[in-house]
Image (cartoon, rainbow over all chains, first blue to last red; front, side, top):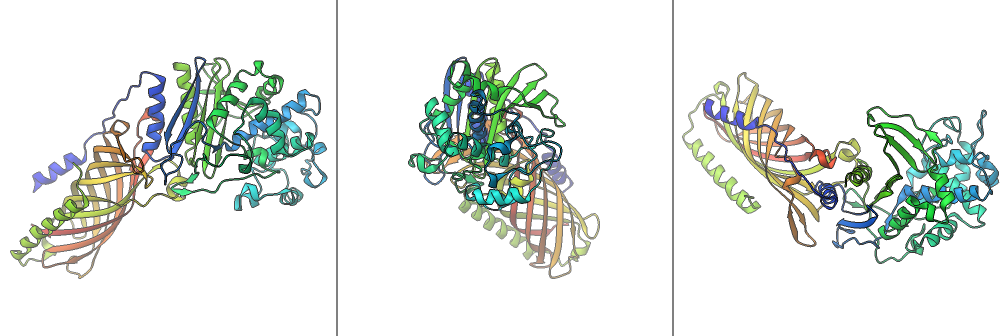
Amino acid sequence: MKKLFLLLAIISCLGCVKKEINPTNIDEEIRLLAKTHLTFGRMPGMAIGIINNGTQKNYFYGVKDLSTGAAIDQFTLFQVASITKTFTAILQAELIVNDSLALTDRANLYLPSHLQIPDSPSQPVTVKALLNHTSGLEREPEEVEATSYYQFNETNMGNYLGQTSLASNPGATYSYSNTGFGLAGHMAGRFYQTNYKTAVDQRIFDAVGMYNTACDWNDLPSDNIATDYFGNEQAHYENYSEVLGGAYAVKSNLHDMMLYLDVVMNHENSFLNEAIALTLQPTFTIPLSAGASEVKRKEIGLAWHIITLNSGKQYIFHNGALKGSASFIGFNPETKEGVVVLINSFCPGMEQDRIGVEILRLLDRY
Amino acid sequence: MMLTPVQLLRLISLSLLVLWSFTLHAQEEDPLKRKIEVGITYTLHRPFYSVNNPLDIVALPKAWRMRNALRISARYYPFEHWFVEASTGYSQEGGGYAQQHTNANYWKNGLYLGYSAKHHRKVIFETYTGIESSVLMSAKFKDKNSKTVENVRPFFRNTYTSIPFGIGLKTPLNNDTFLTLRTSGQLGMYEADSQTFIKAAQIIFPSFQVSVSKFIK
């Protein structure tokens, strides 16, 4: 009996051996990265696009719908979620380079009387503060958290702004705010004498050739949409809200998002050159969090986040997350190599960032 | 080799018969005085993967894919109520969606420390925890829609460690043979592979176990 115990005890204490996987090219690396996430049930599917050494490559893994098993392709529509903010910033930057407004202007000058941002005793909320998350406005109104973005209308926003106060002095503290970008989007729509979704459609999507990109599902084909998931349950789609749309509302596919990535990375060749360049200029330095030892500096431009590593390498990126979707767009401004990741599920571990940043590193290596 | 549910049931039935036959020759001894108990346990459990994030473990809905496990164990009672136990067996685990998931099968070995109420009662409460080491036997990614199966073993470590916890109720079948029903869980601790930036844990909850055990000494 003692021998049996001894044998079982030895078996129980078997040591850990780690397998080595050694991909030799970027295709294998990305496959490993994606397949591992699918293997561990992190998402039903994903579309990944890269621009590497001047060449675009697309990769598709998993399914767009678990019940049908339909495959994802470059035209499958996803909610790009908060990447929307980069479109809002470019829309605003275009107004700035055209001298229609200035970054230092009070935001309330351009907002209707029923959507006035509460005043700060020390400093007003500027256009810049809305676009770099330093306005002091809350992440989003509590009412939105209880329902959905698309159900939040101008009346709701007016009521919310009438009773809320700023959490910090404008321009002083970075605090991610969907509320601020929603108001910035609405403001831009008013400048173009329309609403946000029409303004961004005409000024950016049409101009870049993103013909399957829109803020409203009703403006998109319905036959190739990725089903969104929250865990193993189907998540509802967010539709358009005029007062918050500038923060989250864009739906797009890999084909169009790769066009966008190319235009942003190579903006010198674009008619949007000055506007995009303005959004990529640092406007605020974000304090480094503990554990970010590899990062030398973290800044924000207008919507875009800018990370400078100790090695001197710089990555510019934005991510997106809704209850049923996740996204990432990022690039190295020096090498002009970048990545787009579109996922049809909520990612509790911010897997879209992990995949996106890891691919940015791979692009530097290969 | 993976056992089908039917094969598992046959194995359990056979094991029960063997154990039952032992009871025919059991000595009429006071179980309080005996120290060593051997048993066989069938488990029906729900394994899933989770990243290192409480939101994922608690709030994110997971598929209910029930899988099987079978183990044999030997338990030693150094004191009246406390026991140490070693076990070894086969455990079907994994995770993912109902339609698209990974079946990872392990040879699972455990060392446990537990508390048991007195053995002369009709219903005996017991609880335990411990440490388990699982050796990967196979890992396959299955897509039910396309009916494709892919070997994903290279994405896994060969072993992982976990902490089980459970409570059970035990009842005597005769003087030295017992039937135990347990419910338990397991928190696994491992990362799939450092290259993938995934730190996925194999979690099992809930788990339902039925054991037949016999004091042999």
